[in-house]
Length: 216
Picture 1 (cartoon, one colour):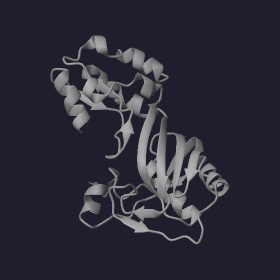
Picture 2: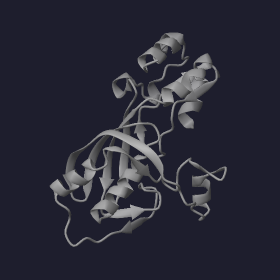
Picture 3: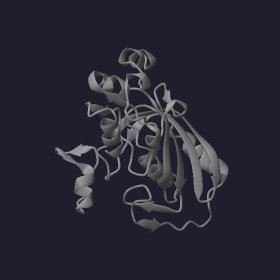
Picture 4: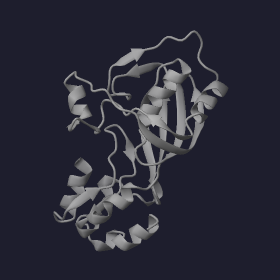
């Protein structure tokens, strides 16, 4: 991952890890841990996440985002805002979700995306996910803007696909932005180009403080 490589270099080559990946086209918060702090990554990964996404309801894609080829879906009439809002709200709670074929989930010991890129998309098993809150922020056919507060393991791209299936339309992510990982928000983030060089302890949150912020 380029972000990790850049931060590691600016920190003088110390061990660097990340608490959860971002999809290739996604932007937003990525929590990094350096040196001995890499031992707390699992605790940081276990925190809840917040996202904002723009979903294009006019087509599906094999990647569930704009990287894949579009498969247009014709609808007799676009769904109303009230219909879309109700469909979005129906994803609140705990339910089974099928991860995208183009994802880092392992199937038979192999990364699903590596198999999918070779034209052998694996059958993805559903798994339990939890959405604490989900809301339609805006809608103008075919674009729906959605805010999500969820637990670890939730796929925003799967939401786009499933929303389209539920509405009888298409559904893929035109954009994804992660706005928070636990207590770590966009307001606290530093753009990659603005990461200091050299990156020293004075620029970092101490590990014990980060753990306390994340709830222990």
